[in-house]
Structure formats: structure tokens, C-alpha cells
Image 1: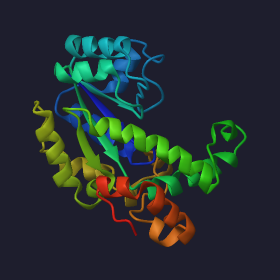
Image 2: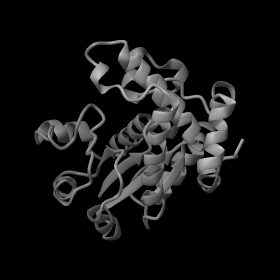
Image 3: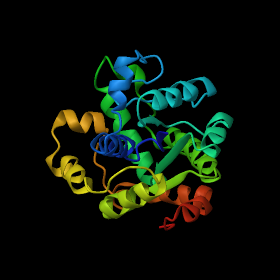
Image 4: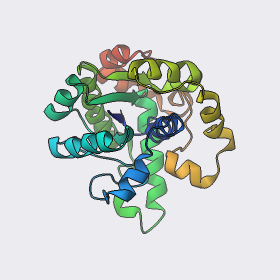
Length: 245
């Protein structure tokens, strides 16, 4: 089995990926980074957090085969479910944990991240939108991806806010969903390891933490922009479990 740690950008995807990867390692499974190094998979598993990107039949076949040759491991993606991903999920060859967050906080975090990238010449070309209206279009696109995962039978959906407020309980629910030889005995160790208050700058970088504040839109978003969210995607906010105000 390969676990796909999927998620909405700026929703704690780096945080949950590292929790899950370390949980696998402590339970006797494989570290995805070691699989990437050993089999020279830089063209498939990108960057430090082993981002597989598009869930194509070929890439999923490769990682699933390696999980049989070695042991289960975790990869990451922000992309939508493909026909191949749905097939592999139905066959039990992969499991999927998809994390999402209040889209209003996603937008603010996305703008912050883009502004930070604009400060540095080597990352400027990677910067996204720094204004509300452009960033709002991005948010609507990632919401479409959330809808597709929500409709995907067999995927486990997790709210960022729930993970932040009850991390131990949420990790136990994920372990129950995996129905695999993953131990819950290491949860406290891992949560201490990734406690936001004790992270150094390097750890925050690969965990992709900016502020990570729940419901920060209530203090930081203009009333006009909050109204746009309410008018244009209010029904979706309710479906995701978030208040309109």
C-alpha cells in the first residue's frame, strides 16, 4: 500500500505529510525519501516532501510496485483525483488522506507566501498572486479539487482546523482508516516533534508553515472581501463545515 497525502495548498499539507511519513517509519514502514534516493525517483517524487504531483497510472504503478518490493510509504500531492487514482483506491493499492482548510484562510496564507517569494530574486518567478481578486480565482480552483476528492469513494477527508485543535484524536482516526500495521503508540512523540512553538526556521520551511492560525480571516480580511466569499461560495463554505461569517 502507498498512502497519498493529498491536500489543498496552504492547508498544512507539509505538516500532515511529515507526521504521516514519520508515523510510517516509526511503525517499521519505509521513509519515502529513502525510496526516492535508492531508486533515483527525482523525476517522480519532487522536492523534500516527495510530491508526486499528477496521479498518473504510470507513476502510481511505480510507487505501488516499490511498496511491494520494499514496504509501504507516503507520497504527497495537491492535485485532483485521476481515473487511475480512483482505480488504485478501489483496488486497495493506495489510500488517500486529503486535508483542507477554510478557503478564506487559504487565500490569506497564499498571498503572504507570494509576497515573501517576491522579496527574493531566486523565488520571484514562482510567486503567485498578491492581490485579493487574483488569489480568489485560485481559491475557487482548489475548491473544485476539494469537490472531486469529496466525491471520491474511499478517500479520507480531514479539516486542518480539526487537526490543529485535536491532533491526537485526528491521527488516531487516520490510523483507523488505514487499517494497516500502523501503531498509535508514537503519536505523542510525533506531535512533540512537530509542535509549532518549538520548530526552527528550517523545519518551518519544509513544513510550509507561515502563520498557521485558524480563522485568521476574521481579524485580517476586509469586510468587502468576506462578503464576496459569502455571496459567491457561501454554499460551499457550509458544505465544508465553515460558518458564513
